[in-house]
Amino acid sequence: MQLHFAVASTIFQNVFSLYKSMLNEIKININGKWLDAHYDPVANLYTFSSCIVLADLHGDGENKLVVGDLGTGSSNMKLKVYRGTGLMSENTLLDLPTGLVSFLMDQHEPRTPAIAVASGPYIYVYKNLRPYFKFTLPPLEVNALEQDVWNQAREDMIDPLSLKEMLDSIRDKADVPLSVRSLRFLMLDPQDMEAFVNLYKEQPIRRQTVITCISTLKKNMADEDAVSCLVIGTESKDVYILDPEAFTVLTKMSLPSAPTQMDVTGQFDVEFRITVACRNGNIYVLRRESPKPKYCIELSSHPVGLVRIGKNVVVGCAQETLQGFTQKGKKLWTVCLPAPVTTMSVMDLPTRGFQAVLVGLANSEVHLYRDKNLISTIKTPDIVTSICFGRYGREDGTLIMTTKGGGLIVKILKRTAVFDDRDSAPGPPLAQSIRLNVPKKTKLYVDQTMRERENSVAMHRAFQMDLSRLRLAAARAYVKALESSLTPMSSSLSEPLRMNAVVQGLGPSFKLTLNIQNTAVCRPVMNLAISFLYDESLYSMKTAFFKIPLLVPGLNYPIDTFVECLSDKGISDIIKVFVLREGKSAPLLTAHINMPVSEGLALN
Image 1: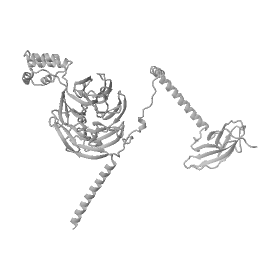
Image 2: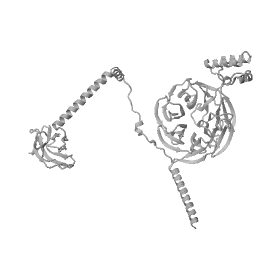
Image 3: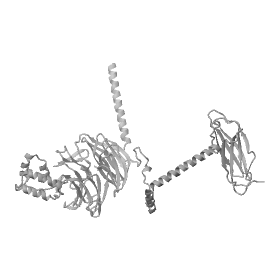
Image 4: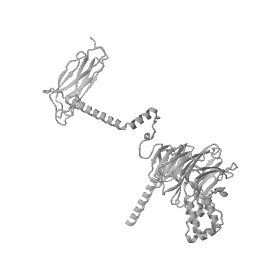
């Protein structure tokens, strides 16, 4: 019987603890801003933010999730489409995807977007989830010296070792890089060179680049369902803008370094701006009719994420910082992060007019920033590798994340969620971040600056001399005040006193109250007297000298007397008060009372 009771008690405790933890979780979810819609830790999705997009593929008003899955990195690469929480379809990709976008190619009905997948030197276009078109990047210029060397090898004029030596010298000196064939040949062992030459010497040399990033640009209208051009960045430091119908190159722009991420805004036929983060650690801004970058933003570390909020650019850097810049490259703010940045995305809610930046961190957190203020933090079960926010299904505020372990997380923003503009992170107040209205430099300011630079030593010496004189004058005045007892506090250790005076009244009669206090710890003070010194033609007092009773330590003794103003000319003077000790000529305390001007006349 006792055994059954113990087992029942244990079961009850376990059920109670489980119920308590469930209540805590429900309470946390109620107080939070997000609803946990779906979490699949074994979804086997390995991707980045550049390879995930939400699109209405069938024109039925229900957005699907399109993901370019990296697979294992060498195989099993697929284009997956999710509807709700289930996998809707998948297509096999021939190579690793570097980017994925949805765009409208034409004005035909129904208005269903196409999916463009960038992979190697190709762009695979899918329409209605079926292969539609394959675009190949234009070939690059081949080095003339390299072409001549391979022609000699084809005619058996040089042996493989001589070919290797000549290609080595060309690689070190030539402006045009070598082709992939030559680079692979230089990596071979001597015994494998002859077979390689015999295999490829009859084939023409081609130098092909690969795509590093991809985005879209509206062609001539800013509407959401307007036709868009494809914008691609390549390893050859070029940016191409492609026509959406004929897939021809409309514009080519050059960069100082290979692009890794880009953000595009505007219309191709009107005005556009392409913000590109490059591999050299800088950010460049390209504009219409400008083949070279218009502005350059130099960063202290390499950029990890790049998003645009309004007219500002927000960059996540490798040194665990988040930085804000204007379109022209002026730095606005910097925020230090608790962990390295793994991915970034934009949270845009047009219905609420709300825009913010979602930042995934390596400590399994996602931070939501509005400007430099941290307004929300989301805990995740694993490190987030990709983030996408938008309309999924028929729900506008859906946050989709994939994790390092291949998991899929779907959260929905509550309709009652409110984000405060206050910074939830500890730190300085918001008022400290307000920029001061610094006036422009005038010619006088510049002249004064030049004079200070030229005479800095002499000015410093003069300043030190004046400062020493001021300190000496202050010390002399202080000693004089102590010696003549001109201060309202006694400097004597045997009679430590404090006195202050209050004048009441409009005139001609004034009430003068003296508050005297013994500041000693336990020693009383006695045999004291008070004397007044004043101009007898202006003032009269009934009693100008009287004794003070024994002063107990710590108590305040108010002593009242009345002063009569004799002048009707509207003038005033100083009345001096002396606290004296019997048998001593020097006063213990001295106070100067500035009498107010009398505002009335005495009645006869």
